[in-house]
Image 1 (cartoon, rainbow, N blue to C red):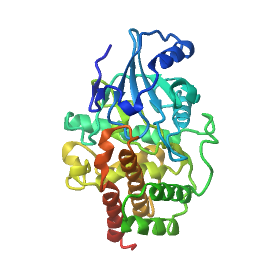
Image 2 (spheres, rainbow, N blue to C red):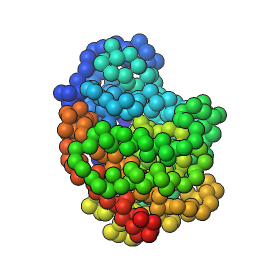
Image 3 (cartoon, rainbow, N blue to C red):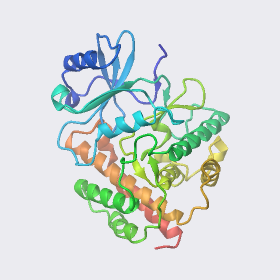
Image 4 (tube, rainbow, N blue to C red):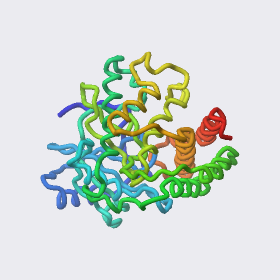
Length: 353
């Protein structure tokens, strides 16, 4: 088997995430074709939301994602949605792992879960992918953009996802959702977030186009080919839904506004390391999809910063509560304020506030 190469550590199952491993093995034996034990279970240490586990057997490797223990926000951790969207994308140009089973019965191991194939390759978290050459980074980012464009061009009705999200008012609904989740997990007053929660819904552009959106599309959520600069699987579909494609595009583009210390490109010219700049990225995406000129771009970036701030605030709160997927969640103190400030900076530079 190919050796696992990853920036994400695999270690023992965290005490708070332990479950009945024999019960899982029995379930997989009965429900996954070809599954044969004995089963060895370890946990991926980098995830901040749904705990993810590496399942090893003598003949095949698997990956399991499950809901975390403890009290959860109502609309979060929907592993069944992750399973559904990847299963629907199986025969499209978007590379995804093979889905093998979904268990919504909490009685089996305590929480709902699904199991998928383990895809051999590299998981590299840093968007600057320092282990690659400039030429490799250029090829990787071109394929990265191509995969995103292909996702947005998938006919969601044809693949059975016509009801994967509510039609219309995407940004209004998303802003409402993330405002509620932010308020539910707030640990300190952040005036910039308070302003964005008021300004964004009052300045939402007309955006009628609908596509499947990933919600967290980035290099770190892709499995890269073991040796080539291309994507072999897109992971972590927890935030996927039917929505407006520019939400994903702006989410990718936020790297151009974050500073190098936080993994962004704001302090450098990314073209010097083989990565497209913001204009080149948008142009390449438009070439593939036929996307016309983007109006109100500052709104989309500010929205992305607001949404990211709400997400990292939730991660930090789960870390304080002890039910995050990684101990690193506690290190997210101040991240929400930082992203909200970046969002405000974008609006100020654009002269709209």
